[in-house]
Amino acid sequence: MFRAQRVLRDERGFTLVEMAIVAVLISILILIVVGTGQASSALAEKVACQSNQKIILDALVSYHQSNGSYPDALTDLVPSHIRGAVPKCPTTGNAYQYDSTTGRAWCPVHEL
Image 1 (cartoon, rainbow, N blue to C red):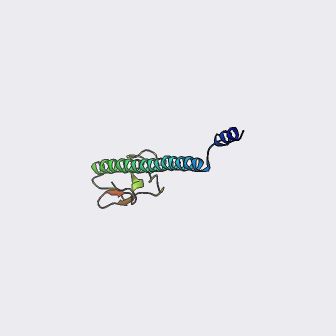
Image 2 (image 1 turned 90 degrees about the horizontal axis):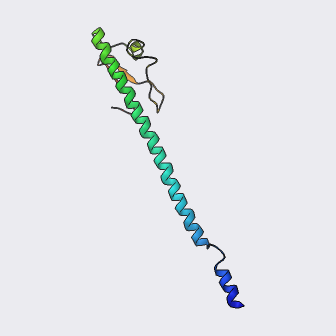
Image 3 (image 1 turned 180 degrees about the vertical axis):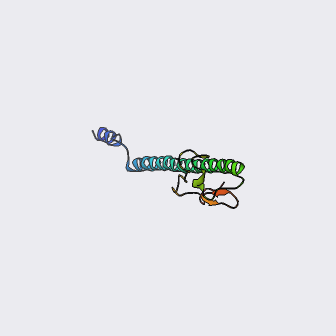
């Protein structure tokens, strides 16, 4: 009878150490997935911002070819060279910096 009780006691379930190891492994996997998602989001914002800068650059080149000079402000590109509104940085929501003497527009966060 003593032997039967001992066998049953050994087979009841997982030990505390086994449960702790599983909890640590699950935590590590969650951290990997969350970190990858945040990195992907930041990369997508950077690519979108650089795409916006290229749209503005193309509009500036087109404006310069049509008028012989660069516009005084990026808003002068609407609606003849940019449809809708002038794009803004998707990360900060701020307007792009612009130098009307050189025709250069840039984002302080995601420069090309």
